Length: 337
Image (cartoon, rainbow, N blue to C red; front, side, top):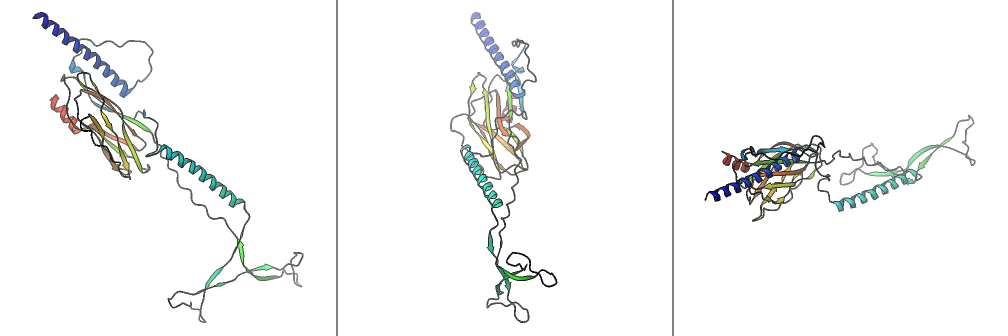
């Protein structure tokens, strides 16, 4: 009997030692993931193995957030479609070329004559406007005149006996054309997308069990920046490392969201009926607003640690505050208290 007890005791000790080792590596991974390395070290030192003095109560990391490190992927304009973008780019290029050619043609072409007409109001003997039966003022077309110098057949000015140049009044029937006024150039937006990642990480081994809850998981408050274009600004899952007490890594279904600025929010998928899933809830806003974006979970199989990365456009959205969701907070406080 003692032999069996000693065997079970040894088995449990090995099991705990394995968990300690694994979770020590998880903690190291969390530190590297969320904070990065300040400098590269080539010392070749091997990290020390966990010692027996490390208890499960020590394997706890309160919920933390890290962001503003500029580690996002290449950015795209809001709601940009690659194929349509290329088509629009080609179309814009052709349009610009046509406009340049048209502009050049106007600048280099000689002036073309056009007929001159002038409408004047008809007045009666007393100088009052003449109107029709409907009371509308009557107008008539008159010739436009111009005083010009008289020249002889050789094109030389004709002068009188005193040597003064002779002039005559002629009817003007045409005048040079002028190029149409150019449209004012539209102001070019200074907005440039820049993706960043918000990390959320947490670990609690002290209960020697998993945490079970559904509903509001994480909460992030964003300031919608002024001067950004209208459109959709996605917030997406970049990484979801979620582990159970039995060292099972869960792979949840991820439903991404968005902040729709002066535009309609895109319809989101519902939670699946049975699969473990995370969902970023989309919100509508306008420039200058402060909005809260929550992450919910459903069909939670139970976990005791996670590292979650959310990608967003920091040129459009500035993180104001971060906190645990109400349901996550209640579950953790209930168990730990």
